[in-house]
Length: 336
Image (cartoon, rainbow, N blue to C red; front, side):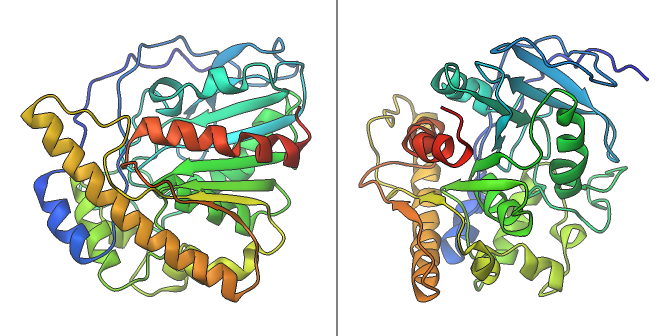
């Protein structure tokens, strides 16, 4: 079976609506991430057998139980087998992974012997396996992102010479929480994990309802279709709960203060509003991340933490955090 070209990108709204501030401030915080990029052709590759040219950039259509999933790839510069999975935020688009156009991630790793794996889609998914389709937006299939990222995608990429066991995973916001979860439950696949501005205690008081509001705002998804309140599945998603399973895993975890920094220069009323949203979200992520740091310390689990004095919930700051964790990623995978 062959897969056609990827659909042309569509512009979508970015930012939070006013109501998420009210809910987020009372609870903890929710991720945001969005952007616009130029379309590229997808590679029809139903049964890969040969390695793509070293250092090339391709869009693949990967079969899955959810249907074909677009995955953007920058291949390792010298044909190495290591890979870095880069996860998007709550407003993940269905045309491009925001790491590919909101940041210079491809430039950062273009000379390194590691492939960048950037799955497209998964808005509001938390990159986990849901138990039912969302009933508030007419979703036709059930999200099974953990299955895709830990079985279907690595099986597919193995045909290109990408290792199933020599990988790192990193993400921002929603993707930061998911990166830790994927690494915790799939230690055979991931040797390193990084969370930038992640939400690392989703069972904290008020957090579920904050997530509910955010997911309705980002695609009208129903959090109850993801996991029932206080169910084993919900607790399984919470980094604060599964923290003991991270022992021995090299990690980089960061969150900024929420104070405007070098990348925050709003020059319009809309810009001021968006900056205010980003400030609140990052400040609340900081509360989560500090609590998670205490949790790891209590378990005597080491991790590299970074708490910049300035910075908001924005892509340019995450670009810098990716660079800060780059050496750890390359060291863990031997991908220099």
